[in-house]
Length: 169
Image (tube, rainbow, N blue to C red; front, side):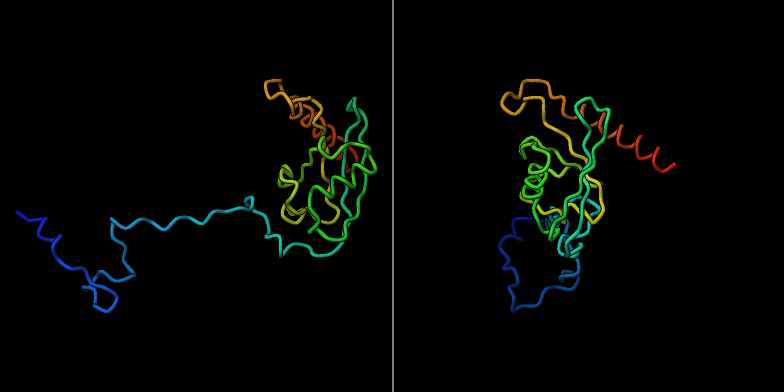
């Protein structure tokens, strides 16, 4: 039988001593923790912000009217895609009269969720069409109210896709 307590009395090698064969840096012991996976702050499949389109460009924003019957597309020019979502929403507010805090923007990558992130962070590019939805449910103050924003967005997206198909067929 092996006396495990005896092994605790042994001195372990330090940086100046050689390790026994097979215990070098290339091998991991089952007792050693796995290195932590690097936290990914970028949505999957997006080009890093620094490598994305650096210059000015025009971005289109589509929004359905209240009835969802007519689709309006506006064009906004930005000097750089490093402009953040909040300042882009301000440009929309100037033209449309919709307060930035009620604007919900979607691109190919999904929701432009964080106002302090740049357009390049979400890989919004020249000529891309963003979809503007309104947070009109009044839920901001009362989280117990049912939210219709996603339902309204789904309707607007379906209408937008239908009109796009009609134009391209």
